[in-house]
Every structure is written in structure tokens, then in C-alpha cells.
Length: 318
Image 1 (cartoon, one colour):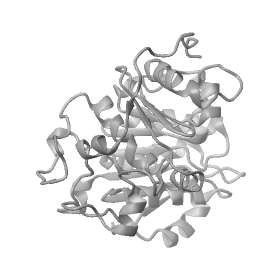
Image 2 (image 1 turned 90 degrees about the vertical axis):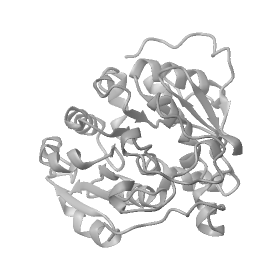
Image 3 (image 1 turned 60 degrees about the horizontal axis):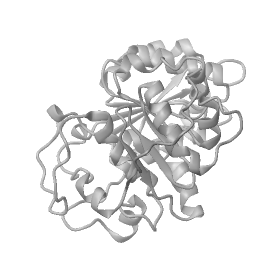
């Protein structure tokens, strides 16, 4: 269990994810081959819940991932392959309840080696099995970002050091109830508590934390924090379903060595080259802003077209 959070909230207010920030951390210009946009691997789902990984895969595609792969329960794989023809779908061994057998991810070595981002947890039904999936994936992920969601989260309360071997290449996306459980608070916490608790958990877990409430509170292990406006309730549900968590790996920031030259007239300052976790965490304003009322909304891009000098993200073939 992580140590209890401090009684007092952080003294300095979190930075606001506003229009100016979105322009400083602009979405990459869509150009060049799809391989240059990275590969996202989604691990999760079950016979009863294949829709969760479907939504995550579509969210990653719409966010701009060049390739998307889905590893899910074998009995659901064929259906998902038809539903998301852009994705490569891998069927994993399942138990009698239709849930992924954790040891089956040992056969994903080639997929993990080629992934720039991996999402674990959506659609899993059993927290114990999901956490074992997570630890097995983390042990084999030599490069790339690991995003932790849904049933893969609770196990971090008992093993807060499980992600530290990744050296900051991890992002967790808890809702208010999951934040309370991870912080040992018992009951669901209020939105006013999220800022301090997100910062506390980021330090304990060694990962970027995106705590989802009325607003999204993002904190990096180094101490930097942001508040992302949540938008109206209906659009927030869309953001949670499609962009959470799929857009996190889809919008994964490329390492400096892989970044492509690009021209972004609407970007006033370049994206920072160093301090990966805190720099990438600021881009949390993209997935959480799927509300049509929020700046930088990918929903707005798909509806109204991209801002001058950029191309709207959309699904691509593998």
C-alpha cells in the first residue's frame, strides 16, 4: 500500500490546460509512413466484454497511432477483427469464464518488441488476473510506454513498485473511486481532492497519473501538475469511453530520436526534448478534451476540420 497522502494539498496551483498550452504541445503533423506514427498494442477484454478493447483500439486510431494491435480472449478475436479491420487482432488463451490466461501473454514477445505504447486492463473482469497480465507485460516491455487502466489498477495498491522498473514510462488512468482505493482512502474521493492525490500517487508509483473526475488532474513523478477541463457531462462520457484509455497510447509522444521534422505554424514554441514524463503528461489535454467544448478536441477536429497547418487524425490501415 502506498504511504498515506499528506494532509495539506500542494501549495502551488496546477497549470491550466488552455488553448495556449495546446498550441505549445501541438499534435504531430500527419505525414509520412504509418510506421513513423508508432504502434499501439491493447491487451484486455474477455468473452463478455470485447467492446472495451474495441473502443480503446478505435480511440488510439483516431488519436493518430499508425498501427493498432489488439490481444484479447481467443473466442472474441474474430468478431473484433471484423469490427476493427484496421487492427491486427491476436487471440489469447482463455479460461472457462472467457478471461485471458495471464501466461498466454508470454507469446506476445514480437508484438511487445514492436510496440511504442501498450495498454493493459480494459475489459478485464478479474482484478487479480488483470494485475498478473500487467506485471507480465511490464517485465517484457523494454521500450515504449505502458498505460494502465480499469481492472489492472487495483493491484498497484498492494504493489506500488510494480511500474518502477519502467523508469517513468508508465501512465495510470484511475477514476475517483480507483484513486481512493490506490491512496487507501476507502470511499470515493471528491473532485477537490484529486489534485493532491494525483501528485501523491505519481510519486509513489513512479508514473504519470491522470485522475478522472469532473476535470482531469494530471501529475508527473517530478512534481509537475495540470488541470484539464472536463467539458459537459455527455461529451465527458464519450471521452472516457473512447479516449480513455485508448487515446493515451495513441497520442504517445515520440522519443526525440524518432521524432520527424515537421512544420506546425500554429505552434508558438517547440515541444520540449527532455523530461519525458512531465512533458508528455501535459499532452493529457488531448484525450481528456474530447468534449466539443474544450480546446484541442479531436471530436471537434473530425467534425469541423483541422486547424490551419495541421491534419485531422483518423483511422488508418495496418
